[in-house]
Length: 221
Image (cartoon, rainbow, N blue to C red; front, side, top):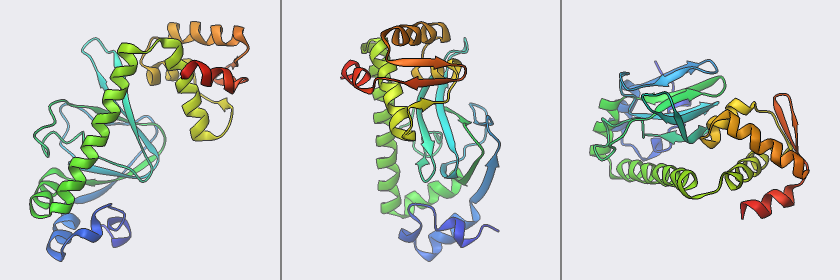
């Protein structure tokens, strides 16, 4: 049985009645995944709502040809319901989830979560606010793909990674960077070479060293 130590990590746990807590407890499981595990797909059972206890998850869409678009990441302490088309009917597309490192999640299954949001207005508001925030992230990604020059997108990506880690050495392969900026690896390689020629970065095997933050910030503006 799932313990209160886990359940109390749900963002809305303290807003539930005793009856609703019982529903959540019965419909919630803990799942652990290794790095690179495919969590959710078109034919998998609906998870309803997930909350990341540790690790991180890449959320993306893929075409029949295999092209992928990274939409956003679910990091430790964050939740997501965009995988739950069976919970909120207004969600009209499906996404796929892949763990980026060893990951542990709380999964509230669809039937239980649906029952809770029908009973509890605070959880319903939480759900729609969460969905709205995620949709905003998706729209921003689409704007970048459609309207931003690729050199600007690359500069923003490098600055964002620097902001997350606090280090100028970004340990990522060019293939992984290509997935994050929604482009081909060859395009990423050319742009990194161009940045290196300008003296803004230094390319190493499996890593990028940022040399000129101000230049990247100016380009990203």
